[in-house]
Amino acid sequence: MPTISIPKRLAKEDLIVIPKREYEEFSQWRKNIRIRLDDSWFWTKEWQKKEAEADKAIRNGKIEGPFSDSSDLLVALKSTRKKK
Image 1 (cartoon, rainbow, N blue to C red):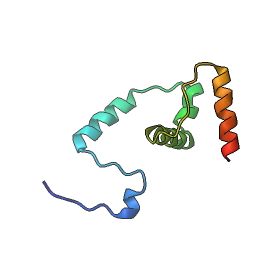
Image 2: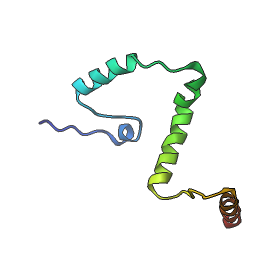
Image 3: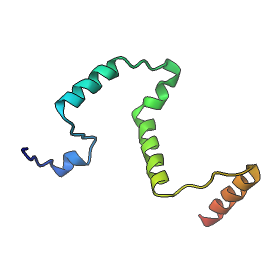
Image 4: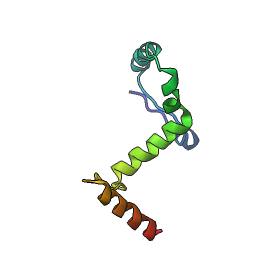
């Protein structure tokens, strides 16, 4: 199997390398997806960036909760504010 080197400037961007057949299957699948107009905000580049940041925070354990009730939530919020 041939090996390629991806320049660092490209690797830092939104570059994904997958087999051609998988890409073609995905392209066909994507054409059939319908997004409701009132849900389109979720698929904006800005929102997807925030989703990726949230996923990273979850993977790194930088989250609070779940909380058993609203009182526990308020305690956590207040302690977070004090740390800043």
